[in-house]
Length: 191
Image (cartoon, rainbow, N blue to C red; front, side, top):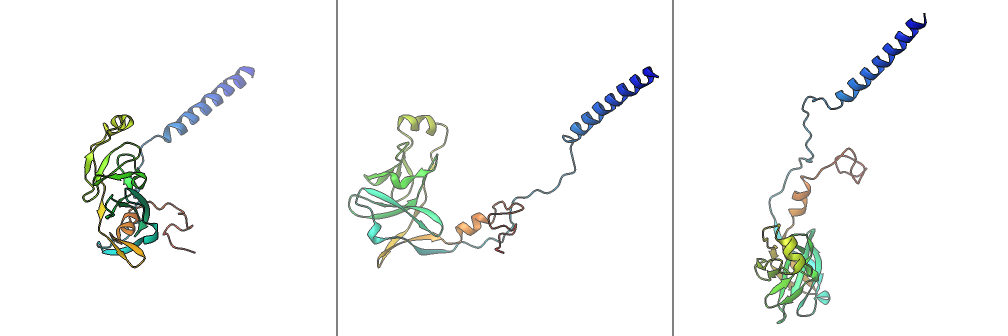
């Protein structure tokens, strides 16, 4: 009788180990493919260029410097050269996306305050790619990339920048929306 209990206990333990192993293995077994798109599949709108307010003329920086603003949901760098001409560029410096608006404006270009890259004020093209010590390390990994430029105009007490007002909505149309988003509903609508 004791040997039967002993065999039964060993059999039960082995069965428990086998069941545990099978359950663990099934967690890694391939399953049927299910579409897992993270896109909202929202309809995209065509590009719509228009001038929108960015900063007040009172907030224009002194010649040789820059400031930041937002136009149409885009981060914009407003730069003023030594002669007082005003330029609008994208405010994210490649390759690590720090604000370009902290840069120094001189000689027709604005320089990245961290890596030293110089961007042409009129075209946004790279004049000098990551020339500083840290810049040579980081910039050597990436190909030189310029920044976008935007037409700019002063109207009344406002500096207006011409941007695609549908850009932000089109970008967000491909954004992930999980079971609950920041507003509490998976479709992005308010309750």
